[in-house]
Image (cartoon, rainbow, N blue to C red; front, top):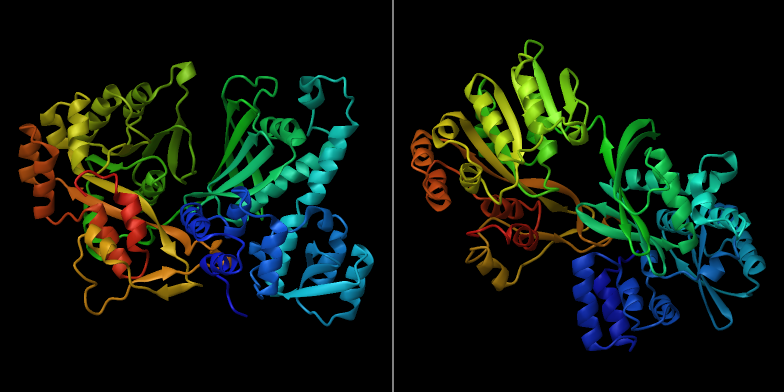
Length: 563
C-alpha cells in the first residue's frame, strides 16, 4: 500500500484547486516547523473546509488515515464496540455517500452494520491497514467515551454551585470516575508515546492537550472548555496541590503504576487568562542509559572514560534546559558507583532513583539550599558528590573547593559550549588558582532527533546547506539520509533522539591559561589542539553516519557562538 507523505498530500490538494501555490508553500513551511498534519494546518489557517480536503484525498486514493479529519457527528452514530469488532472507522459524509476506512471492504456484516448505524446505503471505502484503523479508533473513540461521560457529570452539577464548590471534590469519589479515566488515558498515552511532558493548556475554545515527543510539542486534541475545572482539579488532587489556590503557580508530584512500571510525575501549574495551565513531567524511576548508548563517538568515549577515572576534582556537564544533562549525570553515577565508595547527591527535585546513593532534595522555603546542602554533604565523608546545578557563586565556590579537597564532584552549568564554561565560573567569582587546580573537564551537549528507521531514505542536501555547515561536498563513500515521514514517526521523518557532544579535558597548558584568565576564544583554540571536536563537528559526523540530518544539526547548533 503506497505511503502518502505530507508533501504529496499538499501537492494533491494544490493540483486539485483546494489550495493555491502560495498557500501550498506556507503549509509546507508550517508542517516542517511544527510536525503537524498538512490537512490540520490548512483547516487551522481557514484555507479550506475538512469536507473538501477529505473528499479530494479519498477520490485520489489517499490511504494515510491520519490525514483525514473525521466528522464528530458521524463518529457519534457508531458504537465503539462495533467499530472495533469490524475494524472500520467512519470518516465523513459527502452528499448521499458515507466514507469509511475498512480493513476488509468485502465484509458483508461490516457493511450492514455501517448502513444500519449511519442510515446511509451508499458506502465508499478507504482501504487501510488494520494497525492504522486501530490507531484511529483509539484516537477518536478511546477518550471520547470518557469525555462524554465527564461532560454528563459536569452537567448534572447544580448550575448555582460556585466553581470552587463544584470542583472541590471532583475526582475523589466513584461517581466522578469519568474524569479519572480521562486523566489516566492521557497519562497512559504519554507513556506509550514516550513523551517527556504532557501539557494541559486552557484556550478560548477549549482545553488543548499537547505532548512533547522527541523534543517537539504535538497537539493531541482540544476538549470542551467545561472540562477545564474538573480535569485541573483531578490532577491537582493527585499531585497534592491546593485546588482552591488558582491565582499563583504551584508545584506537586505523584506516582502511578503504568504497564507494571512505577512512574513519577512532576506537576507544575501556571495561572493563565483562561484558567490554570498544567504540565506533567514524566520521570521513569528505572531510567538508566549506559554511557556507551548516549551517542558518544569512539574517540570522545575513550577520553570521557579517562576523565571519570579521577578520584578528585570537578567535572561539569553544560548546555541549555532539556538537553539531557541529568540523564548524562545519572549515567555517570551508575558508571562510577562502587560498594567501597559513598555517593551523595543534591537535587531539585530528585528525578531518578540511584541504587546505593544517598539522594537529597533541596527545600529553599525551609532554608535548605544548594550551598547549605553542599556544606552538610562534606561532613558525611562522601567520595563522590553530585550537585544537580550550579546556580550561584556560593555553590560554585564550595563545589570547586570540594573537588580540590579530595572529592570527585559532578555538576551542571548553563553555558553554550565547553570553553565558555571557564569564563562563566571566573565571572561567578571562583578564584582562578582554585579552578585551575580542581577542574577536570567539561562536557557540552545537545540532543538531536534521529532519522526514523521505517521511512529512512537517501537524499542530497542543497549546496547552501553544505556551505553553511562548512562542507564543500559530501565526502566520498558517504551517503546522507533523511526521513520521508510515516505513521511510525508522526510524519516528521524522525523518531528518537541522541546526543552530540563537545568534550574539553583540561590540559596543563589550559590550567596556566585559567590562572592568567585568558578569553574563551583562546581556550577553545587550545582545546582543539588537544583533540576537542566542536558540537557542530560532532553533529556533522553523525549526519555523515546516517544517524541524523545536516538540517537538524544546523537548527540545534545555530545559537552557539563561533559556529
